[in-house]
Amino acid sequence: MWRWCIILCLLLSIIACGDSKSDNDAGQSPYVANAPKSNPHFDLPEIQQNGELIVLTLYGPESYFEFRGEHFGLQFMIAREYAKSIGASVRVEVSRNQEDLVDKIMNGEGDVIACNMVKADSLMAWLDYVGNDEITTFMDSVSRQRKDPSLRPLTNAAWAVRKDSPLLSASLSQWMKEHQGDFFDYTTIRVKSSSGRTYTPRRKVSSPILNASRGQISLYDDIFKRYATQCGWDWRLIAAQAYQESTFDPQAVSYMGAMGLMQLMPATARDVGVSQSEVFVPESNVRGAVKLIQKLNIHYAAIASHDERINFILAAYNAGSGHVDDARLLAKKYGKDPNVWLGNVDAFVLKMSQAEYYNQPEVKHGYFRGSETYDYVNSIRTRWNEYKKKVKH
Image (cartoon, rainbow, N blue to C red):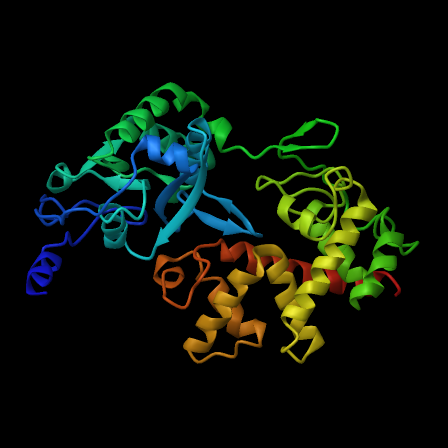
């Protein structure tokens, strides 16, 4: 037992990856010079035989995050394409901290670290670094294109594969060299209709109210009125939500792959019984959205106030109930009311893009763009109030 204690004490201490943006201040390697011997693991033939590539990563906008039940992240999406190329699916294992990433790959719990990891001489005996030039060039282009400094690549960063997985390392390295020019394509969401038509992100903007003098909000008011009764909502609230989602464009496709009038994600559409051939049909799309609202109403049934519950349903419709539930847990942890949105849970929704909060142990679903969810709820509530003033029930 004492020998294992000594080995554990020699574990590497710091790895610069994901959110870390600077090298060691003293100019030294951020790693301890020793690393433990590894457990059994898989190389490329075993991965192909099992049909699963285990990707180790951290939560973050450039690496991996969940949105409405689907998986995103620029580097995750690239890893998914590589997995397809070797006939495997991807299983993601997210670490809460940087040291754990290296721990897991050393112990055979993952096949590749797919996030920006700064090279360290002290790990050269155990890890191969892959894709430095390809990932850095791509992330730099995306950062400049989107004017988003959070996507800026780290200095001297790459993915990592165990040294004793040489076939996987060589395969991934060669694939990145050959497919670097396709990275933008791999990370652009496209949606195919049942007819085979491919939709890229698009939206036709309409007026938020069609004819105030006639009390007509949109061309779809009759549909909103018919389905609003099923979830017990004011039809003007659903209209306000539809405008926020698609600006009343039934053919809208978002950058995340959400579709139609109420912007159903592919997995959500399947879950609420909306087929691929129906997703761009306004009535079918609204029907599916109302089924989702009904499910969320049950999920938040413990929130007694109907008006208060609306805030949580809207937030969960936008971000997913898992992310909202994480924010509620943090609100409770810090002495706020988890059943009240304004000034309580909304404050922690805003913090969920900060690693200090989304890496806390209570948080089960990690990073998400909380500011978008915060604005989503506020915008819909504001527009609903305007509709109530201008349009009779």
